[in-house]
Length: 461
Image (cartoon, rainbow, N blue to C red; front, side, top):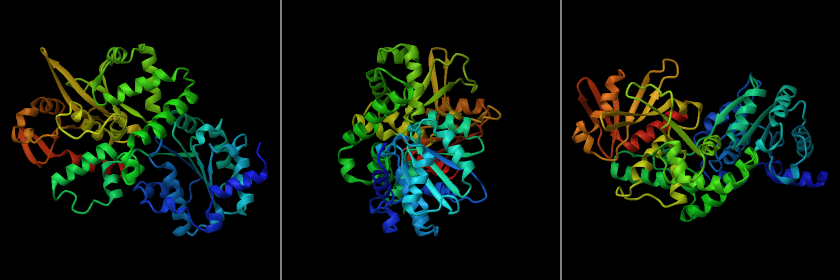
């Protein structure tokens, strides 16, 4: 245990607004993510006694989002500085202390009244505190005058705790990597965005390579050395520390090599056999590692449906996408030219990342079926969870060829017609318009525009 004096010094360092009245300028100098609107709404929602659990991958801006929310509480919400408490749980000084006692000590340091003041208490990286969900539920019930907000990077640990102990007490929010919509807002390029598709496409490729992480998007020094930033601050921390400690993984070398294999081949069709051959691991190990990586928000899996949009009883094929295309670019190299053999897969990964990391992501599939000896495929198929029928579908192309020659997407059109769709979205490089195959409308729009629209829809749900 650390002394009370050491605790007081540390908690004052973590809460500079108690003395200055303002959040550290390192945070306020950067434009907030657009997600701040939804986050702040739930933080300040009155009449509902619920705590907030904010989940998301490392380095997508959870701590920055919290700091921006604190700044808004102080500058626009009329909240007294002493009534806002920020406690990063992974700080050594806070180790070994019950989180209720942490709040008590913080109130003593700030001068807030624990029982009567309207307080806002933020716990950062709470998943490293044992039985955090029980403690947070107890705090939620015991202090109706306090809004508790917890953040963390381990989906399974947080979601399971919120589900089992926080039913009716916690509101779960998921912060995904930057969408293209948020990226454009962050770099201030939204005015006249689609007036020149060549310029928009350049911005989209920049996003594909550098856009998923706020620091990578906004900090030129970080962008100049993305490999070091990603490898040290994201990949190593997640693969060498977070996942091994949470899931008791003994050999991190298998995890590292397996993730590198998936990252390099993002967007491709995989089977347990192909993954076993590529990684040298057993199918049982692969199954576990896929679960761990998805629960750490690093990858998302899209399962296969057939031409009738039916899931196969034995799902042996699936697509694996990084949740952030810039992760691949940083680990290996940026994509720049269409003759790069992985250009199309990386573009497809960027589209997949616009669909977010919420539970709804599992409603997205891909279609693959055989006619004779030929394989046919449709990139993205959305299944309505209620009816289990196709709600929408789109085929991703980085070419204007299908606009000039609609028969190039006749396989995708066959799937759409077979499943009762009136319209099929087909992306292009620059073309927008409507064409038909029979009664099916082919709705063409540039890939960058689809990414922008999907990101906007995800943010406003």
